Length: 331
Image 1 (tube, rainbow, N blue to C red):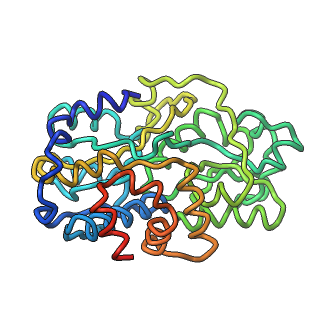
Image 2 (cartoon, rainbow, N blue to C red):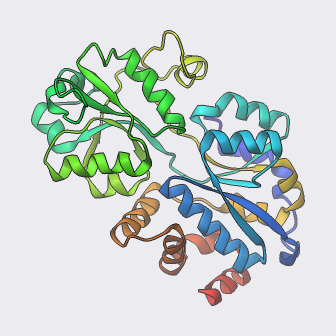
Image 3 (tube, rainbow, N blue to C red):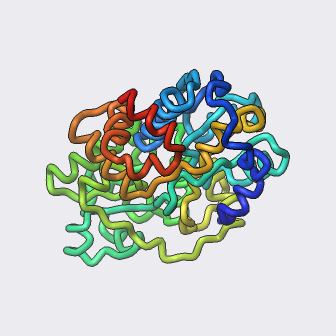
């Protein structure tokens, strides 16, 4: 992954804008509220800080990794994608950055995202499951397939970039030949529900998941070793490509999770870019927030207010003292 120094150097002219730039000139902007918890939470945190602290008029639009990137790249909207997981769009994103259509404002997850195949830790310890190959030797441990003679291997919902990746990995592993059925989870709730159901029944579960998430904070899961190195060229040319004819098993790299903005927005909103350039948090912070949201059936908006009220040591480092006071007064 390119260092954030390089990414920020790319936007140095924008980020070097004077701090005295009037807050009330922020104007109207749109933020993608992605359809997974951490990204939805980030969108609402940005919305509240930008509205209350900078006087922006913020609209939220429904988003997802590939559709949002495509829309920003081709149409220049929405203005901001707070949490863009870029493993599936590396090549077009690099082209968009080089041609100036999309700007990387920051790496929102300072320690990066984690992706891969997981099993319950208890099951991993009982059966000495350390690699994905170990797990595939025991389809009988993973119920849930429509065909009860097969093991269940849970995939991402349709429209998520990880669905293509998981499908290619499953093919490369010869999952079907090893007695497994690739299960379409249908939705984020369906994927989460399959894990909760397995734990409630004290059953095995195998499939794709990622961090930061509330599920991995609530349930003790083990990330399986892929047992191969990451091949960046193969990843970009096949692993992330739908219907790749001959996929090979490929390890995930550290997931790059950026805040991306359109060129026009970056050029016209120096004050907002200054904030976005400083705005970053850790997996531990997000996991704790998502766990609270899950326990309290909280919305993204609820989670954002909870964060602003209970984590001032984190977010006040992103803004000036006067902006911080405005946000605190609005809570």
